[in-house]
Image (cartoon, rainbow, N blue to C red; front, side):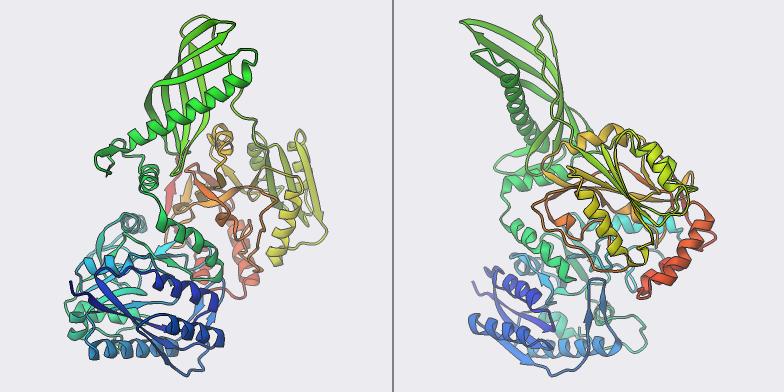
Length: 636
């Protein structure tokens, strides 16, 4: 078999640590049907990055490094990347040089990949096997820290992720619905036609010969060389596609480096674990999933098997602890059957028969008992949340409570909240927390007294700042964190004084806290615009994603903060990288936008404090004053 020749091309100006991860992923690329060569244009302003490129060329075959002397200033930070017209068209020119070399040396394919991408080893082989002229592998990015993760592909125009007819008028609700459908589609393995792509793209020689390139289209106002490339390709009749089988990982900011290890560990995921993962992600379609391991297997078969083992181990353990004077106790879980699934908390209910016997002084006491069990199930294991056993015969076996409840500490910052929602919020939270830490940031009203009254029956620590620290939020959040962990909590509930959960949260929270494999619990946050409606439009979609509001505290972890005066986050920046994250659909209400006077006050405050606001945040702040926002009815 003659292997296809692929030129990997990339203009590079990169942080040395990120560059190392990028180059290491190139070395891992499989080459069963292809032969890779590399052309890097060294545009680095960091000599160490240039040295790393040089070392790669010395230890890897078929590498050319072309030095480009440039004095352009390119700013990257934890918020965003700062581009200008000069930088965009310089990159376009460098990419066109790579295209000319690919054509001149008759490569079968050109693979453009940005130097902050970490690739799955199967990436290029997979893209080549799709036999498309232009196809990208997907990756997902938080373009701003407060954004949800979005793909690097789109359907129309600059970055539109839904189709509509030219004369079609869409409501914001319908546009968001179509966008959500597109994004959800991309989360399923497949090949999809798109209107725009970039950064991780395989291009066949035939597309290059037709004229695909990155030259500026003078009568097109779109920003970015990739958009001009895609418009030109479409005009030439070349289809654009994205593959989603082996998503890449984007190190968009240095803090994303912490996720690289987890991403690379997925390469070695066993087939069974893949089955378990797909099972846990697709539980709403009961019985519909099959995986070929030599025979068809439904997700339910895997679940029942794992649940039976976990339940039997748990019951055996508790019987041994409870009936200590017996010489032998055995329990066998039989006839375990699936009953139902609660999507809100990823909780499965099963029924079973327990066959147990006790041998005591030669006498055998035997029982057949019916039971019901609640099971949390993720990609690695079943965790027994609770079980109930009822005897069909005399001699009922009693079990102690499953686990001692974990300690949940409420952590909150307040400032002059007495006339707003503080009383309602605390009365809701006090039902399920064990202790509370309140940072009063310079209140001049009765906020502190309200806290002392409502929280009087739990352990309470109130710290009163004589002057407010809110103008430097990271200082305030660090103070809150240190005071909270001093209470030695198992779990921390970090909410603001205008946030409270829907009613059924109080019934479910302690089930969630018993899950030993999770370190954070994430919930959707709904921005309420009045008592019965929340806002949903292009700038108000917090409820479309899940954010951490509950985190397990571990004294062994080195917690790190995003050093920003505004929008630093309520938790340390690495809170989601410490362990597994549980996604819950229990809803959290944000009441802070309900009153018109509060909206105006927040608008003025953001304008004053956020002196380095991005274009998106500027438009987001302006939208606060919209007199006719799109509202959706709240449902419990």
